[in-house]
Length: 494
Image 1: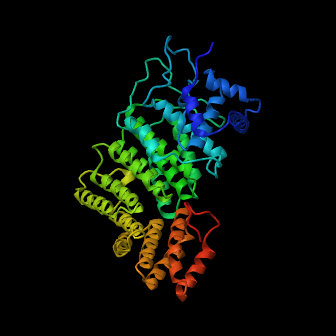
Image 2 (image 1 turned 135 degrees about the horizontal axis):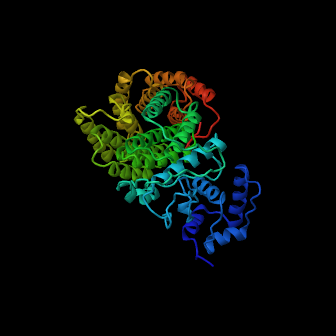
Image 3 (image 1 turned 120 degrees about the horizontal axis):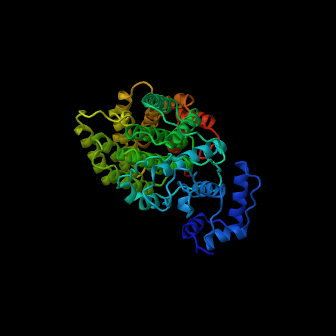
C-alpha cells in the first residue's frame, strides 16, 4: 500500500539536480565501494522512493545520505531523506516504543551517527574531498534559515530508560567502533590530543595532520554512541566539537571546501549537544571565514548573524570580539568601510572589556591581542581594494600583530607578512612591500597551508603595476616559480 510521496526526498532530489537514472547509478557505484556489490538499483526504484514513499533497506539509506551530503555541501541524515533509521533492536526495548525520525533538534544519537558515518566516509574515500566532483557549498542564507530555531533552543536530554540498552550506530560500510563506556582519564587524554593537533595546525597548517584528526573524530563518534554519565558525555561532545572544527579548518586549509563546511556544521551540532552554544557559534564563524576566503562575503554575513545570535548570553566578551572581527572582514570585502570600522570598534571595546576573571575556553586561547590586530590588518587590507586610504591602517595593525606574535604561529605570521606587503603595494611603497613579501615567501614552504598560497596570489596581483621595477620583477619571478600548480579559490590568477 502506498504511503504517499516522500516530500523530503523529493525536495532534496530537486536541489541536487540529478536525474533518477543518474542517482540510481551513483547508489550502485557507492554501495559497491562500501562492499555491497550485489545492489542493483534502477530508475524505477528511485521513482518509487520518491513518488510512493517506498523505504529502501540498508545500505541504501546510508548511501543516499552520503551522496546527498556530498552533493549539497551539508550534512544530510537518513531522517532528512524521509526514511526511518534502522537501528538494532534488543530484547530490552519496550513494547510500543517508536522512533521519532522527524524530531528536531536532533537527538544525541543522531548527531553521533552522522559524525561517525561522515568521518568514516571521509577516511575511506578521502584525500580529495570525499567524492570530489559535483560537491557544492551550501549558501549561508540557506544554513541560517535551516538552523536558526534549532541553534536557539537547548538540546533535549532524554535519559536512557532503566533496563534499556544504549544506542549503537549502524555499520555504514566501514569499520564500526564498538560503543563502550570510558572514564575521565580517557577524556582527559582526548582533550590533550586536541591541544596537540591545534598547536600543530597553528604552526604548520592542516595538510599533514588532517587524516589523524578525522580518524580521532571517528573514534570519538563511536564513543558517543554509548550513553555516559552526563558530566562525561558533555565533555565528550566538547572533544567532538573541537576535533570537528579542527577537521574543518584543516580541510579548508588544504582546499577541501565542501568537506570543511560539513565538519563545521557537525561541530556546531556537537557543541550544542554538549550545551556549549558559544562553541557552536564559533564553529559557524569558521564557515563564515571560509565564505569570505572564497569570495562570498554576503553569505558570510548571513552565517555571522546566526553565529552571533546563536552564541547566547554566556559568550565571553573576547569571544564576541572575535566574532565581530570576522563580520568586519566580510563587510570590508563588500566595500562597506563605515560598517567595517564600526564593527571593528565594537570588537576592540569588547576585547578590552574582558577582565580575564573567567578563564577562556580552550578553543579561544589562541585569540589574543596579536590575533585581534591580525584580523584588523586583514579587514583594512581587504577594504583597501575598494579604498586605498585604508592601506596605512592595515600596515600599522599588521606590524603590531607581528610584534605580538609568539612562537608556534608561523601560519598567522605569514598572513601578517602578506597583509603588510599588500598594504605597502597599495600605498605605493614597493621597496617595503618587496621586503615583507620575501619574508612571507621564505616561510611558506615550511607549512602545508593552501590558504597562504591563495593569499600570495592575491598579493601577486598587486605587483602588476610595478612591472618596470627591478626588485619587484625579480619577486614576481620567484613567486611564479614557487607557487604550486593548484587553482586559485575564486578567480585570482598568476
